[in-house]
View 1 (spheres, rainbow, N blue to C red):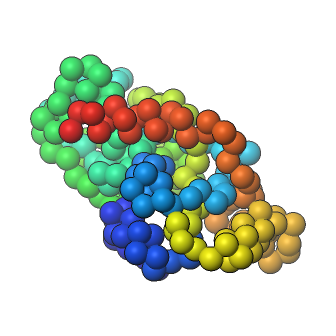
View 2: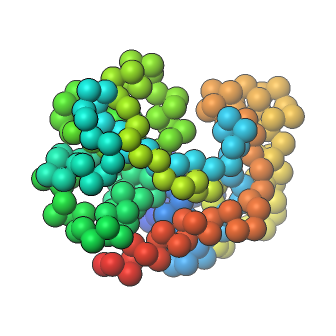
Length: 220
């Protein structure tokens, strides 16, 4: 089930129209709070269970931090993206700026790939992107851009299940995902997704995301 943005994915989970879903961390925090979604497992990518927000500009842009982007055109993936919007927005708020007024234009590109390409193609001067996705982008994208700021680490975007999912199905899903790396077909699928394996979340993994969300929502 594919949806155009994070809000539409939230509706699918809320209305129990899926058995499980891959979600970004800010939508996960809201889904848990607003309609009882549960984190099932999370992916390990490159040996890590965390990611960062990267602020990128074109390779020859002299900007060296977010404040240097005043009056520039900015690309973000989605208003509910932790790495694609919340991190730079909260950073600016904490530096006494209003994010929506700080940039001359904000484009919500719909994905981290498109946000990065907006910078490469000159449609935006800077973008906020998910570090893991950026690191997996084609070399020509990374060679045409550079990272000027990196956020603190956030727990990896998880797999969540709706509140009222049948317990036996939830158990089978968890077992299947946790055991994929031990199965030939499972390993092949994980390799295509560039995921090492799935693991259970450790306590406190999402504390930094939850703190970021509280700061953002307090500003609204």
